[in-house]
Length: 222
Image 1 (cartoon, helix red, strand yellow):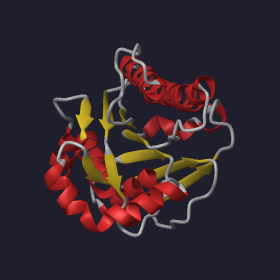
Image 2 (image 1 turned 90 degrees about the vertical axis):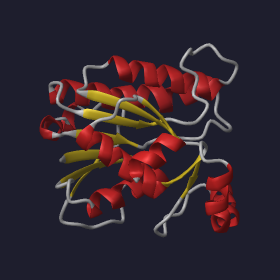
Image 3 (image 1 turned 45 degrees about the vertical axis):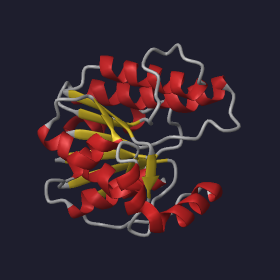
């Protein structure tokens, strides 16, 4: 497969990238980022692109892709709803629309959303409404298939660290107890490794479900 990853400089995106590099089913990885990544590999081609509202100038490489792993996201903490809507909905749909147009229906789109996302778009939680609106819009685009990944707690593995200090402090504390957490809360806990492996699996073989919880992600990864 030829895949594109958005957000490979972040915790989840880097985890997905490392799994792609190790998986023989992935032959080429296109990275689209605002800043260069720190990973070098023969499979990788990287596009550093500043304006994530417009992709016309870099759209040509999108024509031969089989899958997109969209891992770009921000926390809603400290953001107003218009700010979070722009960073979550507007930027995601700009990339997804460009990919859908260029790929002519051959591409599978995998989107990292979150546990508690509100598909009705009417709930009390701002971030959940916006994520739900984003998911619903992605599912309407003319992709070969689209999968919404809704992880809860994500444990970073393979030396990956979160750029958000208080997130990383939490991971440092809870990391030694991950196996216990997974046994106690199997529907809410996963890892960066499992997200990457599950994305590759659904891109390669499909899945009967479009919305995937942590439990689904872990099962697909195995």
